[in-house]
Length: 388
Image (cartoon, rainbow, N blue to C red):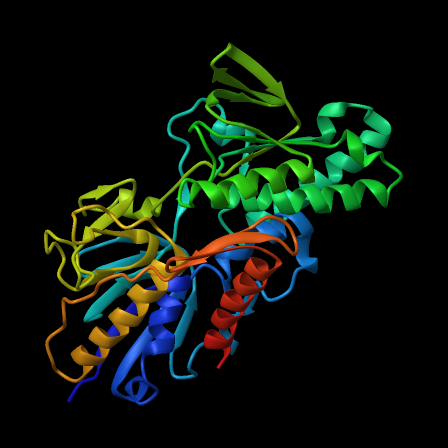
């Protein structure tokens, strides 16, 4: 009997979760290939620490050879097109002859059409992009010694969601350290979070958010709520506030205000919104177009029982990967796939600089050092999962 050929695209949380959840004996029963533009997997929820501290942060990037079963074939290449029966790669050309294709290509930044965002901001969407942010901010802080340009010491973080708040908090500590170790007055460093909504971190209770504001204030981070970004230029942004339109200047502008699915999805024939394909509980597109495809992680959007889309999180991606692994094993065994996946949100935590966090596990809320400890424990569990 001919082995099933299964192609995985992308090495993010969803696909790695799936590949680690497929039992070892199934790699003998099927031919499984992984394509990724990187030869490593990165812990996406920790990219803000790389953006703040650089490569001194450990346990964020992991070589795929240490993660994958040796029977999985790996191709390092860029996916350029999804076709009905094949996939086009930048270097290796067309890959065809696969029975099933799993698209988990990850996310890209969403600019919402705001002028100048693509040209004048940096965003945290990969390990390299995070490292680039760290290097630029560090260079600008050091440049201040010769430029005397206070904008070199100003950092604007566009977006008050998880990534923006976590990054600004870590940056408040790392930028201070960079300045003080180079005889620069750290009190001159200014960090701003710009949020269009009335509050940052809308996924948390008012009590937890109040603690986040207090922590940010203690770190010297200024939060501007109800501030809509109208335009971004080389050394600043224009915002609309209740007082009218204002300009905020800085030579470091970081965009964390939104993400969408992969551009490859947007260019495909699949019906999609914000570069994501709507899927059912079996991880197949609801139109059943190109039935050999599965979509998981940031390439997909899935509705809950009330008809609302689940927010994109690493937790959702991991659970989707586990569910898909079960269906992959069913297919290899010649069984039908199941359509019973239901996301169970268990916990959410937001770090606010080293040693402090807020968050919850089910209905139990935590803050301070204990929350930071729990968050690190959760993050370390993923590392243990992929390296076992």
